[in-house]
Image (cartoon, rainbow, N blue to C red; front, side):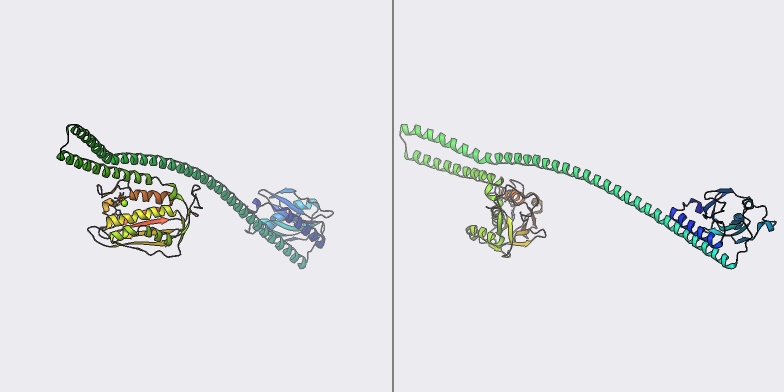
Length: 458
Ligand SMILES: Nc1ncnc2c1ncn2[C@@H]1O[C@H](COP(=O)(O)OP(=O)(O)OP(=O)(O)O)[C@@H](O)[C@H]1O
Ligand SMILES: [Mg+2]
């Protein structure tokens, strides 16, 4: 039966003890009881503390023995026996043996309508309980039954409390697991970052290796030409010295001067080319001056760079326009930025306008979402073929080989933007529609892992 799985809390038992005591007083009987039925027994749950009361709490009796309470539970109705000794049906019931000859009892029902037991009073003499007493017993029964409801509700609350506690404990252990896997993820991430740094370092070494190989290869031609010119000169000088011993003709002298002229010409051009290559190569490694960092006004700095390039711009006949708002301040390396801009402008002047065509080069800037600046250098010249777009930043990529192009200008710009300026550079172009170089430059004060080597006072 459902109620049997419920433990009756101590505070209710104490309350019912008081009720039963008062009830026995009012009914003026020695025995006032609350009985509970068990699977095969009936138990005295609460017994009034009264002199002459033969029942003790926890006492149990067998069922099917003809007890008054058994009839009450079976009929679920009031039972009033004024005197068992005058009633053949009751004269032999077990309570008569205890001298309890009169009985008034009602069934107690659990909230699910199962029979819990009884509430009853017993006396050792004839009792004709009047209606008022019967009504009172009904009231006591109802009060105990509403206590049953409270007990059940409390148990439900306790159960859902326990569920809540279990859920909280589960959540805690989930959180601990999450924390653990988070730590593992962090560990994996730092391993990855370390590996990435190592990769980058080895990649840089490889890039440096190919750069050195490239430079050696590029220097080979001018230096080879110089050597050839020098040894030819040497040969002619020795020949001339021999001819001097025998006396020189005017024609021999003229031929010698012409040979020296040609030789020194070749030497000058080849060594000049070599010197330019060495100069560019030096710039590939970001130099210290370019790294000096400070806050500066972008428009003013760009104007200063344009002023320095004014002669070259004037000679080219192209128009250069800067539309940078006067209030943009950038914390970055102005030296490096100047270097990048002059390489980009130089390229636009060199490559964008062919066969005397004239056009316009514009420099614009706008604040970036990340508080930095997006700078655009664009021209309306011939543009860069799709096939070349992915290679323009590669060292030694040039379409002006043999015409003064080393192919290092954009490589240097890329290095400066990504290292000294901690930004990025991209190119977009369509043939005939010009080229546009987009630089995204952060405020170095805000950039994560700000470079300690950078001199902010410079
Ligand atoms: N604004 C531009 N318009 C068209 N082509 C361009 C432009 N800028 C760069 N290029 C192309 O990109 C190539 C690489 O440029 P980069 O500056 O690296 O080398 P370069 O200018 O050829 O040589 P150097 O810079 O040493 O004089 C150029 O040869 C050219 O083909
Ligand atoms: Mg260039």
